[in-house]
Image 1: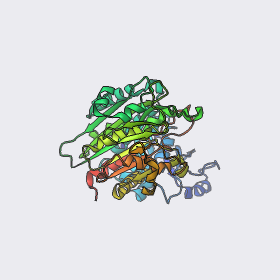
Image 2 (image 1 turned 90 degrees about the vertical axis):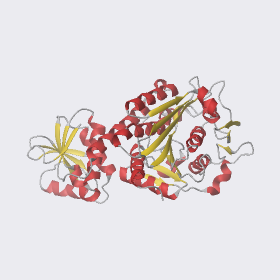
Image 3 (image 1 turned 45 degrees about the horizontal axis):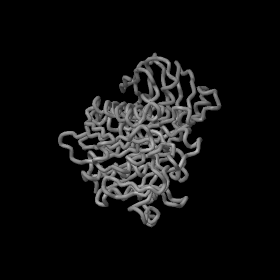
Image 4 (image 1 turned 90 degrees about the horizontal axis):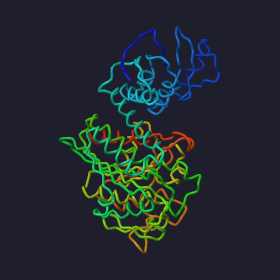
Length: 460
């Protein structure tokens, strides 16, 4: 996609943003005859105003943000038929968001949905500082990669397949990559990851990605849950709950996608990405409820429910990440249904042990237009993860508070002095039926913005 800022040619189609408050004036002027257009984000209407004009809804003027701009831009891009277009969406929102942020969001939305080369002229605004066009294109590229990986059938993306894809992506994008097979994992003592993947004929893998720019001033580890298919193991899921479990590696896809564009962003931050990959299946060697697994830091985990496998494999990877004492550790995972019960399908949960890091993650999500909400780091529930047989247990033996107890268990594997936050994206990681291409890439933009903030300001 070729994007420039300027007045544009008058002989090419136009996309024009419309706020809810402007709809009636358009009707009064005779420009809009269709009564069904209300300017809700994502809604469109075609009119003629000296030439073809596609009206794109932006919702109420107050509250216009990056998410709305991206939604409007993507809806418009899917309807464009020519090879050039003028778009005023960024200009309409520049006063509220700033020109750079508006341009970045619009470019990302157009690139996410265009599906083909197109020349875009962004009208109605002055040249912003920096290079938000490139930033928006990289945002879209990373999101599309995460979506593509998460949408793939599980038969085409067993742990070894995803590890190989990660290695290739790393080689193409200036990252160092090391893929650990089952022998390597045994040497590291990663019994939690090995145990949860032991029921599958496709053994686990761990992908260790590194972006280490010269002169990096800070460091962070990102850990993404990579269960390439989750049957629930012996604690078997229902058929309905199993249908879209190819998406249980969305966290790993997000981390890989974020890292794939880091070299081109040029951020002065050292980033390590750890992707624990496993298939949670029933098999003769599979873990049983009541088994005890040992993570690489020596801590023992009692597995009471094999369908609570994500926190077990993440625990091993988090313990490994903590060995290098980065400035912060963040994990991202489709981990609990209870976060969906609490926040609905569109909002991700953030559970942070460190107040400043939690604030940074929430701020990054707000800037990126990915809705997040903080849930409490409630140590009062820690007794729900303790065990008489091991250091911790993976199942709280209660039906409530499970998003919190999952985060508390993960925190056990990160030393208190390291800032740590957990993102549960179970709801917004997928939209629509299991039969569709429902992966959203949610989390890519938030983690990208988090790294940008870390590049300019250290943790308090």
